[in-house]
Length: 129
Image (cartoon, rainbow, N blue to C red; front, top):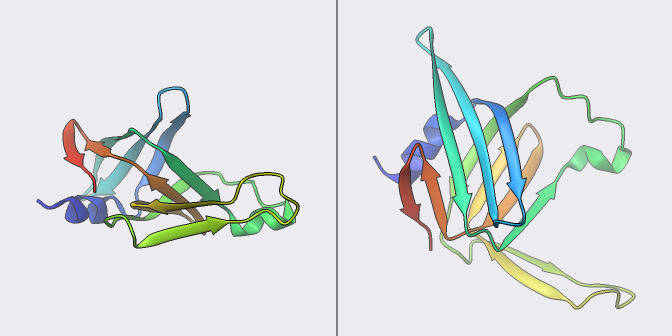
């Protein structure tokens, strides 16, 4: 099965555990899929993370953080150069930066962009471009 097919299967799964490990440059989470009256758990490890961006459109209001569960709405892989971001400082607080992302995850309306070299799904390793 191709990588994107595996990722598509995870759509709608419940995120049971999520860890962002900045020290080890990794993101890991567990997805539970309920299908045909059976629960299947997938362990996801994203290794060698060099960049990530989390965007919650509701955070501007600072009042919509009461999620009783987290659903993985979508999960896409695309070679670098598809998802590009550029940040500029109006007051020179930081050096302007540009980066590209190759993984895109959506949790409800929130988005997580990740640049990574490896993605592991239940011990099956995919080398990302």
